[in-house]
Amino acid sequence: MSRKLLKSTFTVGGMTTVSRVFGLIRDVVIARLFGAGAEVDAFIVAFRIPNFLRRLFAEGGFSQAFVPVLAEYKEQRDETAVKALVDQTSATLGLVLFLVTLVGVIAAPLLIMVFASGFDEAKHVMASDMLRITFPYILFISLTAFAASILNTYKQFAIPAFTPVLLNLSLIGCAIWLAPMMDIPITALAWGVLIAGIAQLLFQFPFLFRLKLFPRPGFNKDKEGVTRILKLMLPTLFAVSIVQINLLVDTIFASFLVDGSISWLYYSDRMVEFPLGVFGIALATVLLPNLSSEHAKKATGKFSDTLDWALRWVFLIAIPAAVALAVLAVPILATLFQYDEFTPYATVMSGKSLLAYTLGLPAFILIKIFAAGFFSRQDTKTPVKVGAIAMVANIGLNFLLVGVFAHAGLALATSLSACLQALLLFLLLKKEAVYKPVSGWIKFFLQIVIAAAAMAFLIFYFIDAPDQWFAWGLIQRAWNLSLWIVAGLLCYFGVLWLTGLRWQNMTAQQ
Image 1 (spheres, helix red, strand yellow):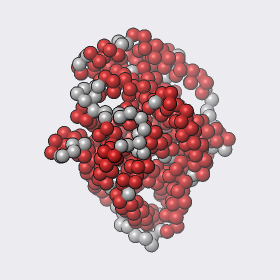
Image 2: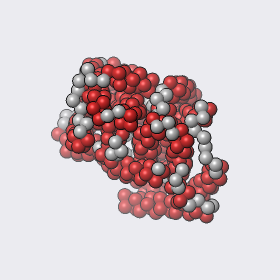
Image 3: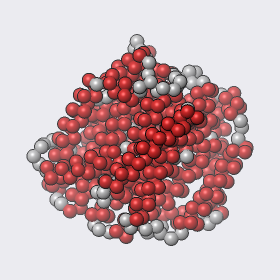
Image 4: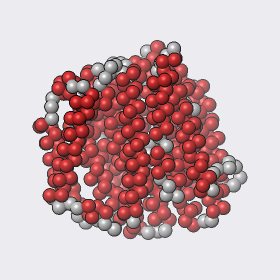
């Protein structure tokens, strides 16, 4: 089973890597053409609000509630029942999303006032106008996530993982070709978001037809199943979106800081999102339907072993990723973004918040895995309680840290609250005896810590100073960054091998 899960994770991770690479290209283009100032701040807020709702309705609450129920139907009922559930769910979800979209477009100025209270009048108007364009994205992308949930449940992970590439291509194209034709060039990015939402939904259709599960919306097909999904979804909406809620809270605080603060947080967050998406979300995506199936079969031992296997991979990948991002923060940001409108000052400021975010990277991934352990068993109340504690902690930490560290304090607050959330979820899984760690964890963890420390020492003490990176051009920056990434990987995995960790230890059957 672990080899199959690993293969599926690599499939999703590979497709997600393609998407994240195009995402980096997208951010490079935006940074180069628009920099990190008031206009980009306004666009980020206009995009972050529907993007937050996407994770709330789509990848967050809805998927986490829908997949376990669909997996149960798939295991225990016939194809007719599965199709009825899909049809009824599509009708209910579509109606809710349409109403939310309508309200969002009408109330755009009010939403900007709430989520970017510190904006002056010019930034408020600009953000409101762009939000009216971007808000319908929530309708199309949530229906896309609905289709992706069906495909993932049937172990077809590649297409949903590849789909976000279309968003990045749309934004790149609009930034390069549409922006020069518009009175306010940054508005082209808002249109790019809307175009991408439509394209991503249409892209799913052929694959649903192939499964014979293309939705034909109807309100009288399986009310019982949809009622179960809604009961699971309401608390799940909050539970899985704590990190995103915290990011929105950070945006509110950052809107009162100097121009560029929201942009600095955005670019540093994008660096953390790369390993989180390529590995963390990929692993959680594969894990949820598998854990849901094992729960439906009442295979409690296999459930725990699968969770243990996933956690080992989290620590193997997340810790060195966090360390590498921390010690290479300025070189990475300079290499990717510091051209034309993006200044060395913006690189340094983004580097400060990136350093703070790296402290929470392992926790961000662990939350995804632990949440799957609860949601696969259709337990949504526990993550809600833990999430509420984490959100309150984040707000309190924001007040404590923003005055000392400015925008970096907001990133640090998010990381610390994520660590608290991950710890509480872990303790509750153990308390409920859902997860029983397999032996060997102490040795395994020490091996990772020693290897990551060796990698950090190598890079930190021998890499060139930031001023040198600022003086280099693109080719020299990219060449040196590539060399240090390769050196870090060789050091990390070399030390792991010397301490006795082998590939078969990570892929052995549970």
